[in-house]
Image 1 (tube, rainbow, N blue to C red):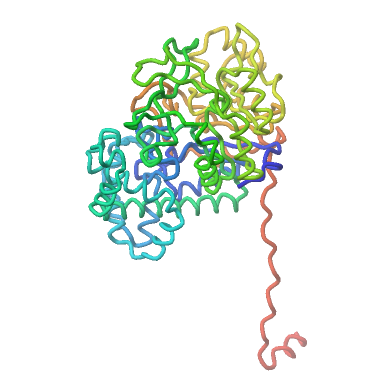
Image 2 (image 1 turned 180 degrees about the vertical axis):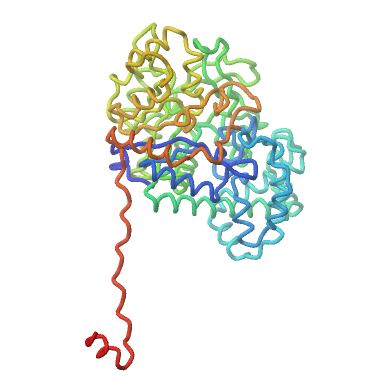
Length: 526
């Protein structure tokens, strides 16, 4: 974990989801490509690699809708490493159908094949003591998660709130019966978590050794169909049948007449406060073990959150409710002193939200694509920045900057070009990048699709939509060239964001060899 007092020195990073790393197995993973990516970051003089949430994906393949706030996505387990460990045969991995497009993840194909391959690895695994140690260390969440996933499979993938009441409501006799019935499946899911965390630990260790810090991402809400809600219903706004009373979303605005209906269950913040937000504290601690810095998504929801009646088809009838505010922030800072946290403070910010952000001490976010509104002055214009913030050309929810020039109004695009001193958008993407890097923001993070100057096919996600293009973009194997690394490094150096490169270890003088009899005299006479 980075120290809050020094991690925000002037620096730069690149945003790239793990899933977008090149791979011959249909989706990015924790193997060779991850290490080559870290090498590229180092050669580019970057300080940070920002990833998206790494939890098990559920609805719409979204990492922001996860089956667990603590578990990891088994799809990211590297198969070549399992082959090296003798758990798999390479020919078994090669003959599987991982999807036809190397630049797009076919989640249906990948999930089907990966589950079969990982089950084979589980059957070949011969380290029960290591697995037992992992299980004991993570007992607070891994048993519930493993049983939850086993039960989902036994119920044809249906959400837990559609299971029969005995297990839906976790009645002790039913729990005991299902644990016994699903023993092998439970062990399998624990095994996949063991592999996930062992491999990710090695990736993080490699990155840190290279001088790269990793920024993780924690969605403020958890999925309604998750082991967290099923195992801890008292933490959420549910009725006596464990049905939500209200759910999360955003109100209607200029971009969405109906608002955004996320559907996540809301927290019982008052009840959470009674034990010092213990569940959240453990979640933050777990995340800061995995990452050096943590971005908390939808930070404004801590000041006040939008609550929509359960069952509504739009967000129109929602209302704002008071969040935990500084009580939550103080609890986190007390439990995890010096935690390096970024607050995602995008959207409609009231004076109260701005006060909370300032009091928290966490840096907020600026997005250049939001800056150039020809109708009014924007807080996202670089000349309005304070040092203590993180600037992005765009986030995972934005189109690529190349595509922004195609979709923005002619007035907004012209304003951006005027601001950057460009006559046309030929160099528009790199104009955005230079503007972000040269701003006063302490940290500048650029999505990799922008450094590659890619169009709409490289968009990571389109909010409020569910389609096969979301979360599926993958980088070409040969995208990270030496020339691109040198270009990025030069821009990073010129903007004063180059990190201190790790020093090579000093070479110890070789010990003199023990001379054989007569060697000394011969040497002296030569």
